[in-house]
Structures are given as structure tokens and as C-alpha cells.
Length: 380
Image (cartoon, rainbow, N blue to C red; front, side, top):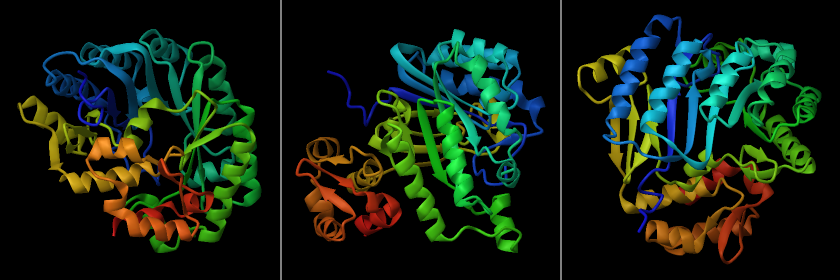
């Protein structure tokens, strides 16, 4: 009998913090100007992976960052080898790697493809030069089409990221970004509203008044536009911020949104195994030192109580177009939706934010626009 997927992982995330530049809006664990630590970092990562004691076959792998493809060819090859030594891929796998349009060449693409990478996620963000500068991106709009020319022959499944709500962004610019994104014919588009994470350079700029955040009405309009445009182009809106052509949903990210188990390795990586959530240190030097001295890189660990875990499952599953299936939810958590959120659910349904299908619940279009507020209401 197989262990349930919410306890034992079949998905793994590897964090590669190295990057050419730390963009002002980015809140991930990023290492800039620390290239001399790349080899030591890979040594430490290999030690952490060896903690598995034996290879564990995975259905999905995801390299995120930072910029995994920023690594020099030799280091990238070593990263792939040590990862697949401990996390071999099952037949029919999905292996995703995040990449920036700049600094990507045909040689690195060939290397990734040779090791089984079959999905690339490109951090495009915008096709407007002025907005790329606001976001501190280091590529030009034309770079995207150029890199796709040598990506597609080797890695056919391509996703692009686009950001709306950038300071100074107009409705016309957002329309243009969506049109240019669709013209590239990606299989998947992730469209995020810009967030001002506390402590980031962009957050500090807003606090000082150096940049002016877009108002909520404009962001709401932009979000409606992306839904209408991408759905009209045949994309499936399968998660709040994610759109895919039929058959091209990101299988790895669906593990997170199902609240299933997953491995996480590297600086700042999170994992969820056997009901325990853990988070690694976000400091590269500390990560390396801890592992080389035989200590765990974990700095935060918690085991959620069953009720907390069930409430969290509602919160993440409701982000999906599939929503929360009553029978599957009870099997996964041991609770029914009614005993946890019955009254709040009925109120949200009356407000037109949630739809009850009998077999489960989903967000309405209005609910998708107010998803955070809906979840907060349910969590009370």
C-alpha cells in the first residue's frame, strides 16, 4: 500500500541562490557577488541531499532561485548530477528550471535537456523597457524571443512569468504585455500582482515615496484583464495566478496547492514531510557552515495540529480552479468542511464569492479577485 501523498513526497525543490542581480521586489534567498561560494554551496547541498540515506524517486523536480541557470556550465552540471543521484526521476516526470532571459545560452539549455529537464520557466515580467527598469530586470524585451529560438528545439514546454501592478504601469502597457506574451506561444503563463515585501528595496522605495504603488482599483482591472485575455486565448485558469494550455498545468506547483508533502533542499528552502514543516536558513554562509560541521540547516520546524493542517488545506486548495473536494478533503484531513467552516462558507456563498457544487467548493470570478479576504474569512 502506497503512503498518502500528503505525508510522503514525490516532489522536490532545490534552491539555487546565486544571481547576477537582486531585483528590488524579490524577497527570495538570493546571493549576489558571492560566486566564490558556489563550489562550497554545492558541497553543502550534496551533504544535505545525502541525509536522505538512499535515493528517493521523484515525479517532479523544480530548480528555483536566485537563477539556477546563472551557474557556470561546470557547476550547473555538478548540480544536476548530485540532485539526480539522490532524487532520480520517475518515468513521465516533470523537471522544471527557472531561468532569466539574459545569461542563457544554447550550451546550458542542451546540458539541462540532457539531464531530463523538460520544462523551463522564464522570468519575463514585462516587455516594456521602462517597467523592466523599475523592476530592476537585467534583460531587454528582445532577449526573450532570442532565447526561445534555442530553448524550443530542446525543451518544448515553456512557461513565462508576467507581473502587473508595477509603479507607473498603464492599462495599455499591460494589454501589450499580454499580447506579446501570447505571441510567443508559451504553454503556461504565471501572472502575478506586484507585492511590496517588507524589507525589500522596492518596499523601502515606496516607504520613502520614491515610487507610487498602483491603487487597488487599477490592480483589480489588470487582474480582470489577464483572466479575460488568457481564458479567451484558450488557457485554463487553474490557480489564482496561473494559466495553462490544456495538459500543461505545472504538476510540481499543484503539489503545493493540494497541501501534499514535498522535499526542499538548499538555502531558504521549505519542506513538508510526514506532517512536519521545516525551513532552512536564508544565509548562504550559515547554510554552508552548518552542513560542513555536521549540523542541520533547518532554523524553523513545526508540526501542525490536525485542525490547523485541515484549515491550511482549505486555504491552499481554494486557490485552485478545482477547489476543495469534500470527499478528498475528509480523507486527507479527517474533517468535513461543514464542521470547520460551515457558517462562514454559507455567508461567502451568499456574497457571491464562493460556489458550492455539492461535491466541493470553488471561488467565483469575484472570489478570485478577493481571494485573500475570502481565506481570511474562512480562517476566523
